Length: 298
Image (tube, rainbow, N blue to C red; front, side, top):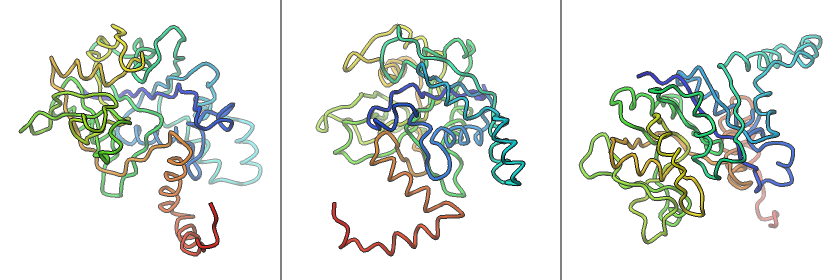
């Protein structure tokens, strides 16, 4: 089975960015010269994805509008002979086939809910990519995009699901879904996963993050609407149930996992991307080197 479709969850309120996120979804906040959502789409497209479903909350249609044509802007850029900017704008609608689904209010709260919102767009036996809107993966020139790494594993082994993981400090395990791997398995198979465990109860330091290859078997489990911690519908709980009856593979993702879920981590991610930007990277690095930190008061 080939993976050609992606669901991207962008239905949150971005409360940690208020008041900036009151009218601008946090997924449209820039990392250097592109919004967060564009990095996610470009990663999916570079991995062979052709159909992309945005799961949004009411009032955030503007996320999809970013990938639509804007004739007035294009005319302005053309008249002012700003060809590079014109090319950048006109390329967006051509990246993929886009669809938008609203996450209805009657659905439970949780990070598994966007999958239920998009389930009518998923074929009966169709595997698909699922991406959180808060996670980016910065890969080097010789590393494939993180989505492609997972797709390659799925298409080779055809499991019930593949989840992307990276190690985190043990002091931070209570922020993530933490995976326990079956001993001696290669590729690694999941034995269990627990959402936000206490530090002294975490089965490992392998944290799942926003990259998954899923099958409709996961949708069937989520559709039972069995709520977990905090009365939320967690994807980790559904995957835990799946691995009891089916093979779930755990993929260590190569690349630098960066999150943009709060202002501090958004700034850190911006710095990492800025330093690698072909136009402003060298100048920005020089600026950072020249800062007199002794005169900077926090």
